[in-house]
Length: 179
Image 1: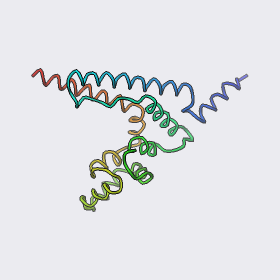
Image 2: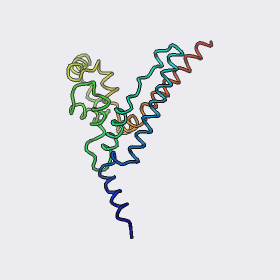
Image 3: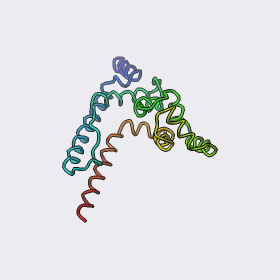
Image 4: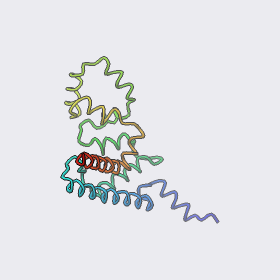
């Protein structure tokens, strides 16, 4: 026989991948690696007395939930979109909710074309009032210039990338001190 038990498990896993034990384990491993690396970089920043190297500590449980939410969003039949995940987890400090989702989904070329005919100071003020950003540049960087590929990459390994950047900054700082 084909093994109805295995097929049933596979169907349940596909319906709710974030609850699947292998996905749970992978999310746990990622968050533990992030926590350990972040702690090591914080220790390095203390040793160098280098605030620009410091990274925020990892809240393991919150980060694990964030990863699992992204997996659930990206799974077939997921309950949202990567843009919604981005707004919930990377733009939570901004106002605008669903309006922000539409901007994240917008083609950056369309945004830049629209901006050609706009008064930049007035637009910056509108963005500050409506979304709580500091200006056009911040809005473009955090909202408009985000691509579909950026979201899963940032969601799954973004912390590891920031740790790598901090280590590189620390190495550059040490090299500068040697000169």
